[in-house]
Image (cartoon, rainbow, N blue to C red; front, side):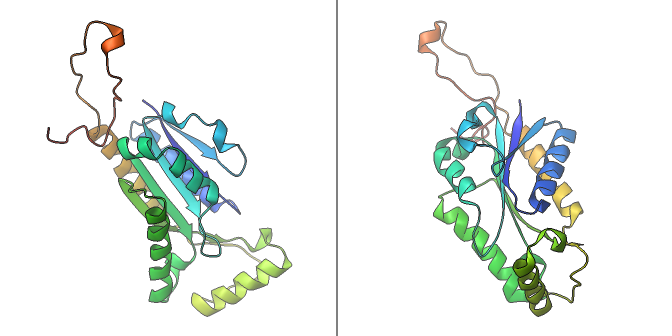
Length: 209
């Protein structure tokens, strides 16, 4: 059994979160790979070879990455059967203003609704301000937004807002959920051509007949 975290990152914070989730799931007995859709071609990834999937995207200008949306659409039936999770990374979720936090959650919910994807687990994590990686215009735009919505910041340093305990809890809880989705072996017909392929891990494993 093996899982994968498929993610889209811009300045690197979503990548750090994805790697942390993979590490936590592996520690929880679920060996987990990672795949960055911004560096590699998602169409070449054999998602169906995994027993569980985590999808994650940073939220920029009220949009999640379209490559993550494509992956969901392409594998919708698979994701509806196996343990699947989703996380969104934004700065709005750590804002001091309630409406900003609510907006971050709403955008994540709308993204999932638009893609007709109901993950078994979902989360919104706080990101980071990477002033050192921004261009002149984006640096000043993000500084203005931070001043308006969260707290004063300085342009000559970076800020990380991710609550790593929350990330670790997400990984640990999802790993436990995956283990709970293991199917009990069922008798199969003698002849191979009459057998119905069945995944070892499914969210329907414990469903009533």
